[in-house]
Image (cartoon, rainbow, N blue to C red):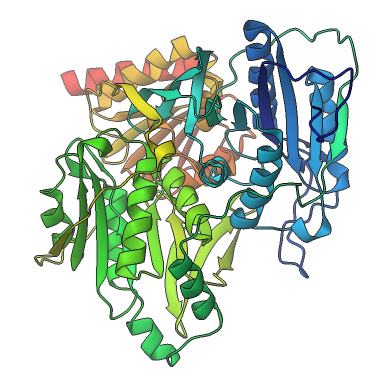
Length: 576
């Protein structure tokens, strides 16, 4: 049977089908602006296939070569203008392309986009689905988790290596703490839903193709919709609240029940989560709750109480030992229902982003991400987020409840307010697909000095170093100064340095007393992660590099010569 449901004498369904979800984005270098009418990014100019999605297509084709008889299908949601990007994917070697297109889908949010893509993917019924790590015009990195939840498929994100064999997928993935290695079992012969490609695993020769790939226009509504799994009581609750406030604005503000996801690592609650907890405690005159999920995490409730949580929901179960998102989506969905929470807040991280997106799909709840502020205004929650490369700030809101928010890393500082929280134990009941992933290895980066978030001195390296071997120059300077080593996104994407050291819009935000940038051009995405440093020193051979515009001291010179001399001088001064 052909993919469109018809029978064709010449069509034979391949043993393995890989779907790659791609997006057309504005051409790199094109001027970007917000349409004053729609208040969305103006996409009327030239478009291009998202660079991260190119990596995902390449990976699908690599798997096709290694697996044998395999079909690669490209799936995209967008306007008819996206056809050129799909043709590029076909020219790379994909077999077919499906465009889901309708004017009603323009500007759709995570809930609507994930629903449409899930419907198209369910019709295709692929064994494996790949996504790019993110789109070039958005740093959300959340779509795959929402699609996975709608399709009830296991999911692993931030993949840097992927091996598929015997109906199982082994993934090496990057987190803030190093590299994990999850194993994902097939679900009804469907192996893993989403492997977010962050690293380009190498180029491959362009192949000669025996036949032309096919383009299909599926329309916004696929033949068979994805299963709706909202609980009946949740659906009614959401519609009632969407109809309008039941209390005067002032009362609504005081009664807003808020839940904060409290991520933990190494037996401690994460600083970012405690900062969000502190912020939520001062949003309005309301009790704020936290939720902790893991194995042996009961003692963390007291720490949450000291930082402003009046109530802490504790899901303590061996099934939650590994830091995997989908079991935690099950836990949070239950807590939101039982606690009646209309606001759920997350501090941005690899794990939190996956949980927030999965929960948004589970509850059909609006999710705003990359927020740098929250406030209650006339009874309504208003978020602030950067846009257009952090050159402007926009205010965002929610049309219904529950409302979900993902806060940019390092935005809010923790504050101890004292207090003993009420502790509520959560019974852990997991969906079948949430148990299909297991952690083979949970590695952690060896760290001799302070973390980049806590260090008073940070020495960062960029592409100007020329290669990963030259990071030894940065490491020696940091060691001499007693500081920590950081890296830019370009360096991390190239595999030169660990993801846990990335500073910038999609990495960590730092505010040391001294920040030394070595071979860093100063893109706006990097600036936002280090602009709060007390003193910024830039070393770059390009006198016109943007980083000199916001540096306190600039050195125009070759980092390979300047940095060793600087290290030598620091050691001499300390030795004297």
